[in-house]
Length: 273
Image 1 (cartoon, rainbow, N blue to C red):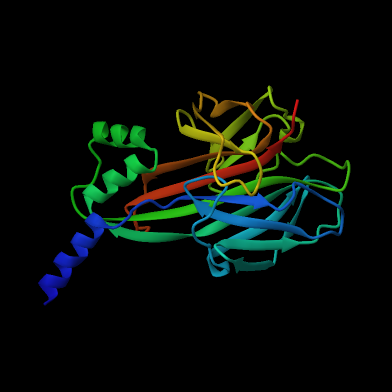
Image 2 (image 1 turned 180 degrees about the horizontal axis):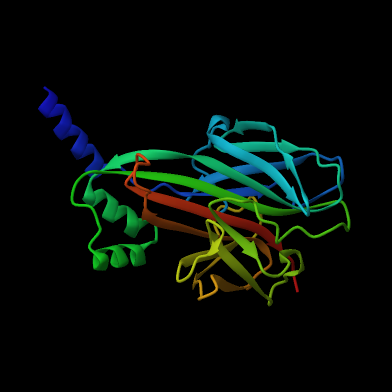
């Protein structure tokens, strides 16, 4: 019986869905009055800005409103339909970054499943790199993944900018210019940081939806970070934008995992010309 169950488990790993999906923060509105309720949906899917399932509150490692020189914890966390739901009443006027980190989860899988995961989640360059280095697994492994999401909002009118503030996530995007000034026809530059250092030659995806209630994005683009960890997104349309990426690397020795997968997203709104 034990042999049968082991074989069944390996079969399940081989045929079950292995995509994990991105995690985005999509505000109800990108500008709110001071002391008004700021509502944000945590969306989990492969199609921005929709959601297929809700990250539960117990999986949230941190939820903050990051401002210029200060941070406010976001404590009201729940689920609504298929979304994680965050609500907060910021009193201080100014720009803020909503930043959420989700606790890591570990998944055992076969080498074949891991290779398919790299391909399906848009990281074929990682597959090629690790094949060249000869470090791809030949036995069953443990893949650990964590997700980090940011969105830019404005509280009241004026106040200090916060777009360049670091959330301190292991993997995060930091705008080089202010996304609040970006309009259709402009370009917006970002920096990708992995453990605080520029992440070079990483694949990044960008897309835009007409509104927060859109069923699908209306334009996509793909980019690669340069030697400074930076990339430029052409703002082709007005609407709700995101950049997203995952980065896969061998887990530290003794960590309980073989491979770590770090997901990061950043959401903002671009206006008409």
